[in-house]
Image (cartoon, rainbow, N blue to C red):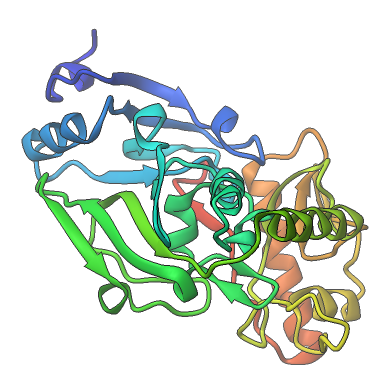
Length: 312
């Protein structure tokens, strides 16, 4: 046992020093975390944060579906929630889901109960990320159905946050520094179960036809300059969609090292097999530069980029 691990509070979950994060992200890149903490349950997480020295940086991480971890890794305690945080409960029109519950599982279970959270079905990732990023598609957003979130603060206290606390905006929210979201509740509109499942199947079919679902990607790379998601309707206007301005700049299929802007959907940054995090981020920055030159539009990253670069 090293000095780093020895200096941390005792836990019932798992502490791993120098844990590579590349296998925990959808893009399969990135260096190690100083320490990865996988708490057994909420109480374990509370006890750990309460006893952790205040100068130790904490970074919550979901399933890594919207994330580039840089090649030099992360100098922090990375907290990744697992099985103790993936419960899904339904009471009337209220759906309560643990932060580690997958969006697709929540959508399906809600539909079984005749509740419409169908927009979550095609969103990669977990509920914690969906709330933090105000995830959405087909004209619906997490904010539309959000009721409350439960977080563990950096001091180890449980706190309930409302929509007003989170300041929902397009692909962003405001969270207390160092807080770890552990669950969220949603008020879902009612629908007929078979019709909801049929809608989700149609959404999946549309996604598979237009997105590179078999490639290593992290979903949409840049936010739409228009400031809202595609509606999926026939009358959708594409002029200020990220994919369209990337296309117009001649960047569909653009490559750098092992990184590529997808041929199928140019707003998807993919790892063709041997990309580094530096390749992916550098290609993304090159796309931003060329789109700005071509259209005067500054693309904003939707994928989160965290950690340190390797020294030159």
